[in-house]
Amino acid sequence: MSVSRDPFHDHPESRTLVGRPEHSGLREFEYWPLDAAMAEHGFAPGWRRADEERDATRIAALSGHEGPLRVFACGSLMRDLSMRFDAVRVATAPHHVCHFCPFDEGTRAQPGLMAALDAADPGDPGCTELAFRIPETIVEEESRILWRREMLAEACRPVFIDVDTARGGLRVLAFLAEAKAALVRRDIPIAQQAETIAVACGLLGSIASYLSALVDHLKDLGLNDPTAFARLDRVRALQDAKAAD
Image 1 (cartoon, rainbow, N blue to C red):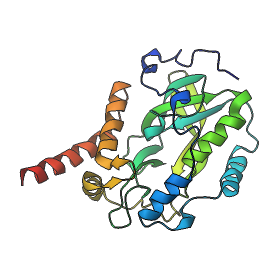
Image 2: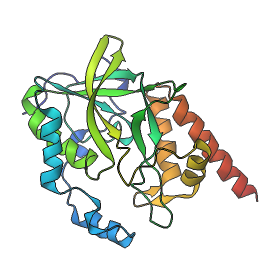
Image 3: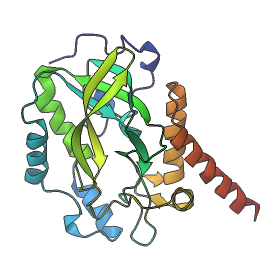
């Protein structure tokens, strides 16, 4: 089924800034190249969820849900969505923040950090990102694609949270960092995060470049994320200092 309504009706400025699902390499991908790469970087064969386990979490999370499904996108999910949608809105999660806490990049010798939504600490400003709506008729198909991406390993858990938009509150699906997961470290101070990001290079390249691209995308969308902006400033200052040595 095609999505007939204009997905960018509420935010036409985001039309050229959100990747087309049909162009995403994450809609359909094979696990074996990733398994081989992870093995080469020192990860055990059981680093990711089995298909049956992953789909069981999807069924449990969506149990009782009816109608369209709204998904809160944090990090690279905004740029390369991979799922079809029929509406997008700017949304603020006042009790959550986009932290760098999962160790799902890099190597065992030099692990990296990736962005994930997490519960906000006291004083955190909350998180303003994008919320996408999947039409009811394609929720089953698109949620499977979403789960293959976001629930690949045991670093995240699916939950429904409340967000604010210019047109009122929404209940949205979000993927939060799983505090109990071995791949997640929520206790790393900001200064240490910056030191790690400044030098880490994982399967997808430089983590600093990933953060820089994320910040650029937020700015292009007109979104203010003080936490991400301040983290990038720290990383660049460290890189500049090292280059000056």
